Image (cartoon, one colour):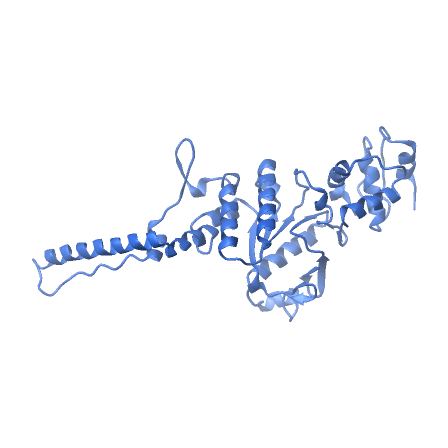
Length: 346
């Protein structure tokens, strides 16, 4: 069980899984969750203004009633093109910087650096021979080229495709996802540490195909390492083939946070409250759920052609304790029992 403070003594709670989806209509709760995760990830004490928000005890996140220490967790936020670029670029603390820094332990690299050092000594001798022609008192000293110097001042990254090289900063996030995933995997293998990757509104900067690639790749890394937790916080449902196991990993942000049960229990509850025998396959029911998840817990006035999505929506609303939705619909496609159910009052 994870418990995250949104504001002073106000928490959101949910069962932990490797992959969690946060959907729903409550924009304020979504932003508070993102804010708390980002602030926790800074690993610094709160200032006075922040203490007004989170209280004197500071921002608290619990796992199974144990207070978490942010220093024991790495946080990665993927929320726009820049957040992908920064990790693939050679910036301080980035995944790429840490990857290239690991080369400093390579025997071949250190051998070549020694060769460079010897060449610099030879150049220094030439300089001093020339300087002796004008002064008996002045000499030159060339500084060693260290591995850190090499990375800081002599390495520049570019992106090559079938046409030519591009500056890395010109590349779209969709083009850099392969490198991002490989760098993350390599980092967790090299330095095993629990890592939370927070993916915020990915549909705003990634295509549906690349979102699917990213989520499948991250799922594989999570299974292989046991270290990665992926949280997708989105204001719209992703155009992505959700798995049956995603049901229990979905938290609906409405008037409160509602986590769905395991799929078998989820289906059984739907069947027990559906106005007639539920004929949908597991896969279709899963798909239909994600088609209506953004409307759970709100009261839209739904007009137009009714479908079984609206029946499913009403069933889930009732299971979660919400009042009836004010339907104004045409009844094409629906059975008599489904029509009657939509118009009924509790």
